[in-house]
Image 1 (tube, rainbow, N blue to C red):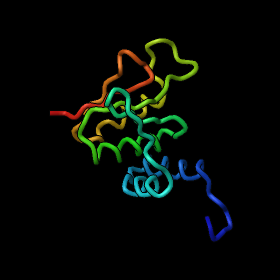
Image 2: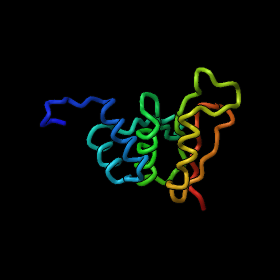
Image 3: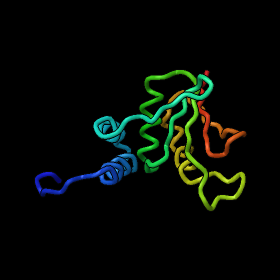
Image 4: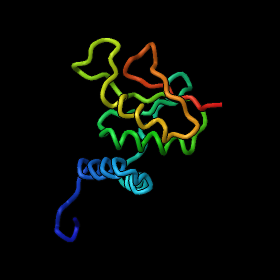
Length: 125
């Protein structure tokens, strides 16, 4: 891209990450994420919260994948609730992450019953 004088931006990098995730090239996806983005983490009541807002589905998943590789305590991911979602309907990002859950070795994902726009991640015993 750079040789062709194309200046990639955040959207370009997220599209590339999405492609890598789609084709199960998670190592390239993680490397690109680490070079271009940072894990968006805050704390609520001493529990880590990963914010997936403004990330594509694949980029949000890679953010979570990188986080679970270095942490062992339960945490939440804010996936948001779609504008057009009805009560108790998961948004598309949450569905995407739940479909990829098998790649998060040793982790269980649950919906947060108090906040439908969040997923709770718990290390499996």
